[in-house]
Image 1: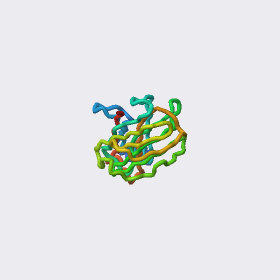
Image 2 (image 1 turned 45 degrees about the horizontal axis):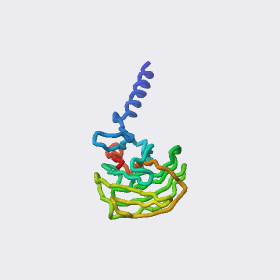
Image 3 (image 1 turned 90 degrees about the vertical axis):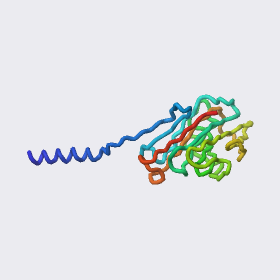
Image 4 (image 1 turned 180 degrees about the vertical axis):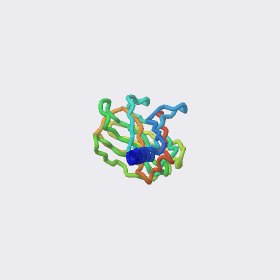
Length: 194
């Protein structure tokens, strides 16, 4: 009987030790009272992930995609930004323009599980750097030519016809453990479609 009590006690202590008592929080692209859509997590489940959402409308018309975004916390080297050109009936095809808090941008195309770099990570003095700095991302389309703007300045043009659509959305890159530090420092990014 004494042996059974010791085994039960060890079993209980093991499970108490497994529960750190802390809980993780994730806000998955929810509209806040400040008018911004927020993506937030301090959950290790999201290490090395790229959460995104596509909206069914483009409020600027079919040839202009535009958002404002800012990063409140998280690794400086992991990007966030705007999806654009997504077709109406397909959710895994789009282009995205992503920026970092340390002043770089890139353009990528996603078709299914394949990501193709259109513009490699490039530094730009057109971005406001640091946390809680609002940047405006804009892309205009003329047939198959896209023009990329950062805070109103044209920084890049590209031509591609493999994706045709009018939807816009948001994307966040969450770094690996070590780059991100959960739960102490969450990834917190805010977006607003213009």
